[in-house]
Amino acid sequence: MLIGCRSYFSYSGNSTSDIPFHKRKPPNMDKAIIIGTNGPQLEPRYYEIVGNVMSQVDNVTVFWNHCKDAVEMLRYEAETVGANALINVSCTSGKYNADASRTAITFKNREEALKVLKGIKAIPE
Picture 1: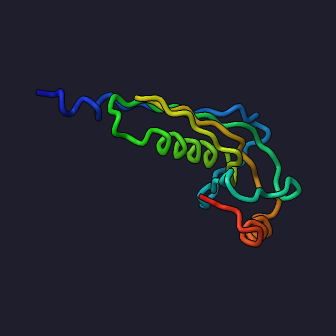
Picture 2: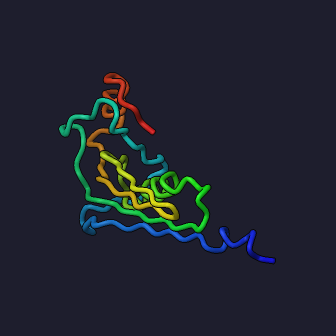
């Protein structure tokens, strides 16, 4: 009887980072943005690299968008360490799982960085 509900009970996910404690900042109220790899990139003078974040999700159903969940877990992990954005996001999806990783950054000046991203028509997600 529980076979149809099995996929909901078998979902798992985790995220982690290699960000040293001295580079962590308190979480802020702004959602971390993801700067898409398909468009122009922000120049390094506008940000500081904080470290790498990684996530993994598993689900027994093949009809689930595993990468979407893995990337959202990356975003959450970045937010918890005080990062403003993620760059160079990649995700590898299997039949029942996905692994995502990338670089978390903090803007030196958030307003200026967002203005530059808009000016170069970067693709924030």
